[in-house]
Image (cartoon, rainbow, N blue to C red):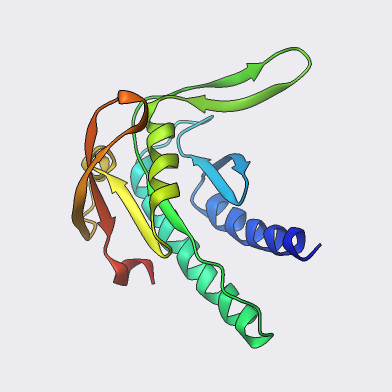
Length: 164
């Protein structure tokens, strides 16, 4: 019961942040959230919105953790992965069960990077960095071999002061 309560509180706060930046919550995978920008409605600056959302999620989580600490609850810490590129979106499944989802390498890459990101870290692919017209403070991290044999990509970390 406590786990369900904690996840619902966490997801409520994160979804509010995601919606502020016009993100679409695609799905929950355990305690993770897959978010799309530019689907189902095209947006300009999707990658920048994703970065701004990641920053805001970490700020909201800091506030939530301060409240949790006041009642002796452990902090919640997250890692985030961001990629950009073309994907296929639509209702996938059968007549018995459809799910609006996105399919493509950027979805897989972002999820993979998010799952390997240490707590309080945002990993951003070079694809996403290239699409952001505004300057964002990033530091090259390393080349990462993507799952599924789709090649290597240079991954950056969003500089810490920008996520706090």
